[in-house]
Length: 425
Ligand code: F0G
Image 1 (cartoon, helix red, strand yellow):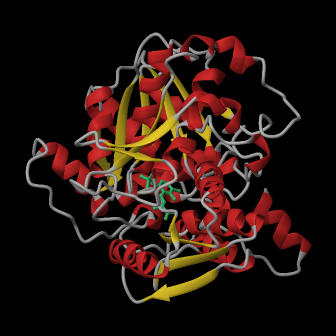
Image 2 (cartoon, helix red, strand yellow):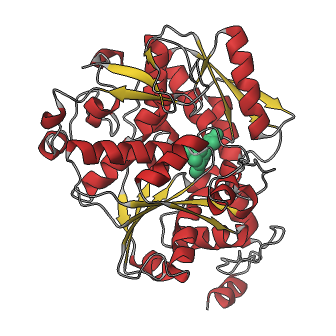
């Protein structure tokens, strides 16, 4: 079965062996497209259900379980995997009640090997880098992409190079990049500028770019949808709600859902709601303006993972919104941190950006767009340990402009039994 690179704007095609991220003739974003023609009919629910619980590589991965839909041409032994995916889907009545609906499922992508959904795109991106014979890979990152790339590059014996903004990178993420041995460049620039820098520097030095502008990343990230829908016994929910930053996930979800619908794995398309932070809301503004005259924003939010003002996958995200009759919502940092405290408080936990899903679902219910009886699938994108400073700052009431509604106040006591007993009574 063959795969090709194809421009989403002008349909120009390129072989997948080319190191190219945008179309040479029109500058459009590229898709990796697979010809499902002959084998489309064999891609059944039974095929993928039959691989559940597999011990053998690569089907023990929650990405490569769907290999035919992800990167069909790769030799199984050439796959660089950490058995990513296979993340849990939680049905959470207390979170549903908080959002004002009957049923919500949260898929916890923070349960991936490096603690975020990025591992799903990194296994395919690094596998492709290896197939191309690359020695060095690079990315700009708000933290999770770099943590993931550092891990997979180390696994594959490649040098990982990460471009980080010089402020506001969450501690857990920074620690991972350093620990996994990547070359870490802290640059006096924000994420959006680093995104430009990494592309220019990589072109000059022949380094492979593993940001989500690389379409092989998105092929892996589609598997979030495949796996979630399989866990829902292939019944599409009414809504899927996910945070949006660089819009890689949004782009991958649209492509993945459409392909599932085309090969008959699902019989209807769910609607996608992309949720952005108010201070980092370029897609929200663009959506409200009827997609006329896109303007980047200077981003600022406590959800540092999505502190992005000029998303590279903008056009693919717009295409997803068309394919899924989707919409875009924005939420405040206060709403994000309160929703996070709720998710943390039921014992599941997530990093701030992830809480956009629940905060956004709640707001869409309040606005009458999501109905009480609708089934909602929310994405939790990162692990609670990624950003300890935001969590502790919230509960200590030390975050500027945020008053913690669901505070878990820390108690202090002397070495005094009576005092401790009094505190706990
Ligand atoms: N949630 C988390 C935890 C993230 O790390 C990111 C993106 C997003 C949501 C947004 O996803 O970019 O696909 O729209 N983090 C990137 C990074 C940008 O560098 O780690 P997106």
